[in-house]
Length: 136
Image 1 (spheres, helix red, strand yellow):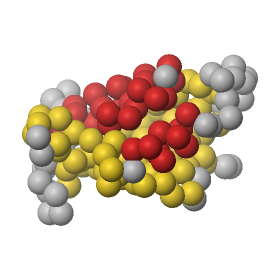
Image 2 (image 1 turned 135 degrees about the vertical axis):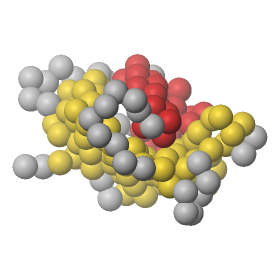
Image 3 (image 1 turned 120 degrees about the vertical axis):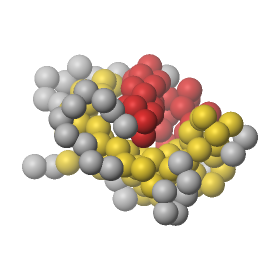
């Protein structure tokens, strides 16, 4: 699918951007609210550590050692993943992470592999989640 710089977004881009806004709004306010976005076969790779399943993933996210966090999204690139999973969407995010009101935000990148929910094809869940801080 070719895309110029036009304002018409592909459906997968719109879904990906909506997901990203929802995900980080919940992450920044109450990380436990992210649980419905994962499944028992979901996997998180966070700074090289791997967690599988809803409870281990949420336990990791809520145990992160900061009180306040704000994600500032710089880019959000999305692609359909049709060959391996119908209606799958690959989402790559980069941005700034402001932790505990620090004046020096950290750079981060995160990739999500979203799959459509078999029980609700218009809904997506996180099958794979890869997070890394970008050290310069």
